[in-house]
Image 1 (tube, rainbow, N blue to C red):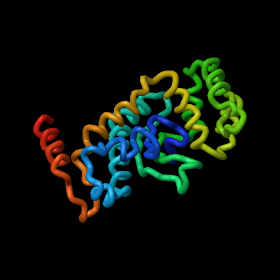
Image 2 (image 1 turned 180 degrees about the vertical axis):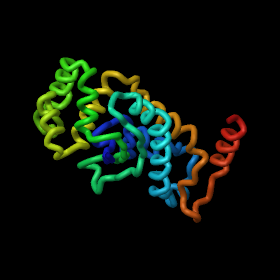
Image 3 (image 1 turned 90 degrees about the vertical axis):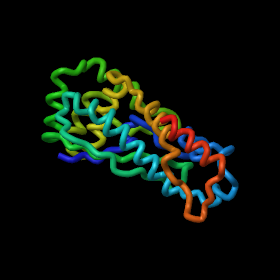
Length: 214
């Protein structure tokens, strides 16, 4: 069975590129860039760079952790970064697919035998509660989670609830640090500008220094 998920449901990393550590102006040092370069900056190329970086973190670190869970996860793939039309109402998200051996209900039945049910129920109640200005659409208890699973109405949301519990309670969860390190290490390997851009002398020296010391 194929499940279409993403960081909008399971925030194992944050690929937000607006007012964040991954914003281009924070990753690419202003002191190294000329005004002309910023004028030819290609946001699509930069987004692709963040996607490729996110894919590596997913493939090399998060997916192996998912496969180790008692959920019969066979494979997975990071697919795309999707950006909102307006950042006031959302952020950039990394979408990924997971393939499980059977159905979500079959995975849940197997997982449920070994999970600490009291801890899971407490987690769902605390993490998924609504508050002023925010309405949660995630299950608030094991009972609600089981109802959602048995209904088959939203397998992705049900599976995400389980993954979030594992991510927040049984995982070292250093994926964001890994992503930031990768982005800052690999940024000199990519060209984020249109063909008209001129690479500044300082940018070239920085790249050559990094390449020689790698």
